Length: 415
Image (cartoon, rainbow, N blue to C red; front, side):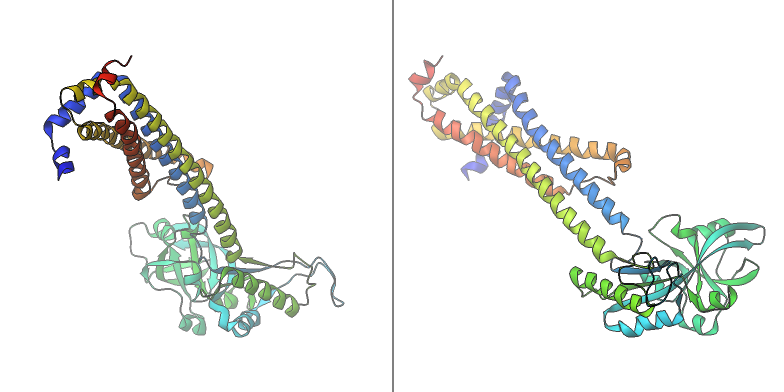
């Protein structure tokens, strides 16, 4: 109750403000020390979060548990086969992937790549075409804006249907309806059954998807495949997923009679390896940020403590007069602590605001340095400010208690 009365004691606050007004220099020194500590803390954590956002965006385009299997040319002879042999995936490779690794595969799709000239009435443009299986929607994290995606019925019937990106629709249709309309791709008419968006950016939204069986029938009349994509079972730990990717590479090299040491003929890009590397990097980054952040706060705490010791020492005679006219030790301690808490809170909040506005002001320019949307969670900086307030309280209490014990006659004689 006494502390609450002190908190709402108008006379006490008037006295504190008068004291601060009379001692502007030491008030500013204390405030600048605290504000600078919180400002550095905010900027540091904000830039750290910006780096994290950059890594998150780098992997935003595809599922985080993706594995991509690509082919090339052999560089070593093997089992009587010459080097320089081009490895070609076919439909049986897709079937083999599904059957052989079923337990550890979540989604799987093949890909065929083509470049096409798309024409709709008077509008035309060039686009990338991907012929895929239905699971590809989840591999690419494609979000349907209108209509539907490729389905199994389309594969069975080799339907001449396509799903177009948002920017393809804007290019060819402007604000007109695209669903149900026909687009001419390299001389063949296809019906638009869906429009999608993709977080991967403009390039991903200028892609056209069609059933893989349709592309095989129309563009080559064969069962060739350019690439195999899958997502591994999410229950797998990162090390297990990495081992799974290595097993796929080994099995497919055996299937296509490729020297196990040949790095060019077949490659497996496993997001688990990237995720593990990013995880390790982020752990180190967090430790560095935490270490520097704690160091910044400690520097702020030491600065506050030194200033508070100096302030109380400077006011020894004033405190002696207060005791001489009847002020109790507790009232002196309470007054100094309230001053300390008030200055720390205001300066800390000011440092927080300056830091947040600085991050917003320089946010765009930092994108050139792989730092995206630098920001800091409120609870982190508020927690740091509270720590400084507590430190300011302790820093004010210790010298204040010492000063409150001094006898009035000794304090009045202090030079």
